[in-house]
Amino acid sequence: MGNLPATRVTPNLPFHVSGVDFAGPFFITDRKGRGCKITKCYLSLFICFATKALHLEVASDLTTDIFILCLRHFISRRGKPLKLYCDNGKNFVGANNEITNFFKFNSESISGFAADEGIQFKFSPPYSPHFGGLWEAGVKSAKYHATRILGDKHLTFEELSTLFAQIEAILNSRPLTPLSSDPNDLNPLTPAHFLIGRPLTSLPSENLLDINLNRLDRYRCLEKLRQHLWERWRKEYLSELQQRHKWQVNQQAFKEGDLAIIKEANLPPLKWRMARIHKLYPGSDGIVRVADVYTKNGIVRRAVHNLYPLTNSSTTGAPQNPEHFEGGGGC
Image 1 (cartoon, rainbow, N blue to C red):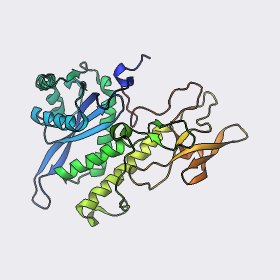
Image 2: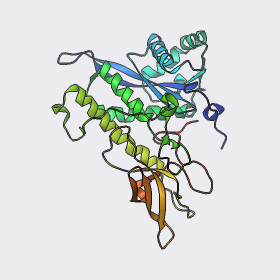
Image 3: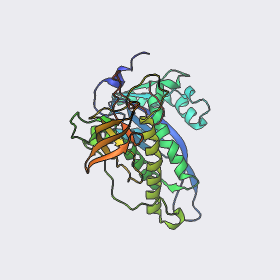
């Protein structure tokens, strides 16, 4: 296997080298109440190659002018990138025709704008979707659950923009690796550390998952959608951290001092319960199934299957934490 591209492993400012992609369509209403008109909109996703941070924008249509406006929003909030990578239109085999045609017929005008702004706009080769594995994984994380929690519910443009801003915060809160090797440090490194210098937090709110949507006003309905997406995405992200393979050799997933995520139900959005492995309890066969972990509330005992490692203790020394979000890879 070849090495990762230099843009993926070279330390740099957030979004200095980024990828961009579109997803959708999503359906919105022009106003609240009855008699409203339903129209299409799309998700514009930017992802940083170095930090894996995400930036989401809602585009009202697939025209060059709207894409340039989304790009200007992105530059105003995240800074101007040096290079911007994008799929070639021919890569969208079986995808939405409008997205395919947008990249196919507007590549010259987009490249012209990027050249005027001093941005190197690079398209991946035709029929090579794996070149965009990093942003395709980001699209999967943002779109996969969003389409399922929305169902047949239609939001206004402002409500959908708010929902995607909250999805952006959720994805940028994911733990990547321990922040330090200090056994008393329970803080993980997240994409948010590169953006604001600290973990992302959210406003406290009541648990709305068990309340029907028709009993909620629009604001609380939007909050329930956020909590529902957080619950679905968190479970899938944790399952990726604890991948199970056939035992070819006997190796432990943990060693004392490792940082891990504790599996707990009903945690509020952007909340991860972190712990350090304090003591392992191997069975008669030498396999560890129970461990004492150090948390901010003291030492507790947990089964190993409820712990998700951020580091890999195998002899290879390779990190176990995937760079993708939910099974998607990046090339």
